Length: 357
Image 1 (tube, helix red, strand yellow):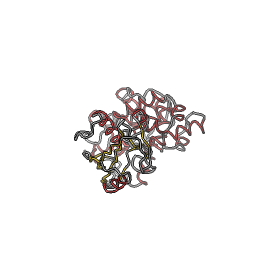
Image 2 (cartoon, one colour; image 1 turned 90 degrees about the vertical axis):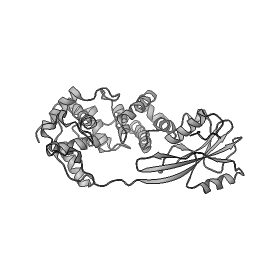
Image 3 (cartoon, one colour; image 1 turned 30 degrees about the vertical axis):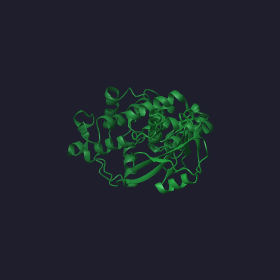
Image 4 (cartoon, helix red, strand yellow; image 1 turned 60 degrees about the horizontal axis):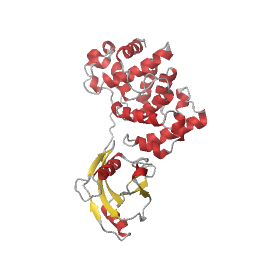
């Protein structure tokens, strides 16, 4: 293949690509790695604030490796896909323990670290060290399949591997330390800004004269991936046990499972089971608060909070312990639970109000 794609993407990125994101304009693998992990399944506008908070607290991989996992999960709360945060922490510890605190320079070695797959490894190696390796995230798949007219179904692993091979063939072949950075960033920028899923800005795209999908008049048909995720729904009852001094009973969620590793109100599959646990305490002053829906990627959670007020810090027949406000501020909580507790605190001690949520 000729160098049209590579040369045009490199030139376009220098002139019109994104240059103001907080993880750009650096060859620091720590910051590039952190951004790549955060950007998986998450929009740039959301990641920016989290990224800034993370690097302010954990300036380098050593600081992240030494931090308690609870603190990492606390800063991650709200980004979702919490396995990413757990792998992030494990990866930092491995970089320190196995590599002397220095990230490996090759994509092949980077893939041996927790949470780093082929595309993430390639992004770090290309952006930081100029290695000639291809990334294939969602944005790049869209650009490449449209440019090539690649109509094979990416739900099949064999077809995705073919696209990987084509992506590698199209990479720059010279001045790699400079061009691989521009090209890799440029492919991501094109997918994020011009070659969007709907209504792509084809007239101003630097690849328009060679783009097969545009010539066919059907760019929005690419990429093809037939297998669709099935959504499910689940109802969960939450025991919101609170003492008069504002302490809340929380337990750490098991791994694997929803909100794994985070601290949460005790969860129950039905109202009757929750009631039976409370009855063991000889307490019956429960109050059902308004239920609400929390949307995960593959599932809708219907959450039903049930408030239990207790005078003192008596033990409950459940895993967990009492947490005061100062402790809660330092641990990882699922986003909807964190919001509930914040709203409850803002409403003061009168939780009989119907608008507590």
